[in-house]
Length: 101
Image (cartoon, rainbow, N blue to C red; front, side, top):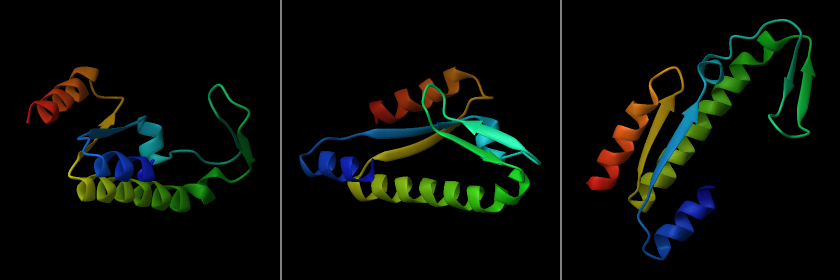
């Protein structure tokens, strides 16, 4: 994704990127034995200590968010996030405002 942003900006495209996450993706509240499955795909990870993965997962998520934000900033694009616990209208309003400006 980061390469796509840079390539698009290099040919003069403007853009807005929004990262949409579920609250569980933001907090990783899992503990004990958990089977993680990719929605609609073959990916899966079975663990007996989900709580032991929390710190590494949250650090990787924060780094990914920072990388996307930096790529957007370098391209002159806007970057925002949306939590699915919030009303979708909030995300749409933000996107509308970013595209207007």
